[in-house]
Image (cartoon, rainbow over all chains, first blue to last red; front, side):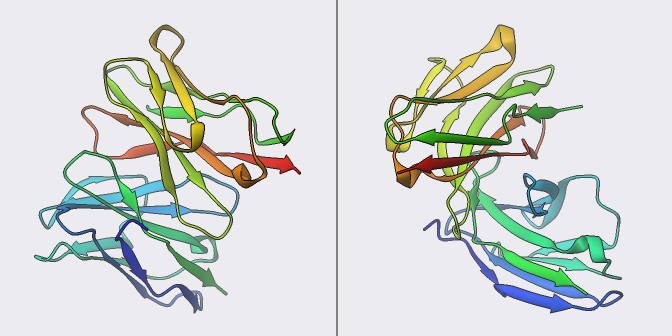
Length: 111
Length: 113
C-alpha cells in the first residue's frame, strides 16, 4: 500500500455529464499528478499540481481540470464526458519531482 | 518529444525461465528511468528506478535493469521468473526538466506454472 487513496472506486456516467474524482496524497507529499489509463495502454499524463498550482499538462482538452487543496488532496474534474473518456484514472503523489506513488485508481465508464 | 517504446506486448514464459523486457526511450537530456508493475487487480507499484550512478539497478523481487545511455535503453531482467510475476510491466521516463512521467504501452507477462 502506498498511502494514496482515491474515490470512488468505480463510476458510471452518461455522455455529456460532468464527473469529479478525488485523491488523497501520501502524508508529506506536496505534488500530485493525474493520469488516464485506457484499456491495454500505459498511463497518459493529464496534469500535475504542486503547492496548489498547475505545474505541467499533457495533451488533454480544457474540459479536464483539477484542483489541489492546502492539505494536498486533489480533484480531477471532467466536463462534457465523451465515450472515449472511459478509462482508469490514476492519481500519484510525490515530494516534488521525486518518485511518484500511485493510488488504486478510479474506473470511469461513460455510456 | 519524449517517448518510451516497449518492444514486446505479450511475453509468455515457463517458471524458472529468464526474463528480459526491452525498453527504449527518446529524450535529449538527463533522464530518470523507472519500471512499474501492475499485478492483476492491484495498483501500479515501483519495481526499480534509475536516477544516477551505477547503471545496473537492483529492485524488488529479484528484478534488475541496466541503463545503457548510448542505446537509450533500460531493459528489465530477472534470472528466474515465478508464477507470481504474472503482471503488466511498464517502463517510464521522467526528463529532468519535465514534470510528467511518460509511460510505455506496457508488456503483459504470463508465466506458465
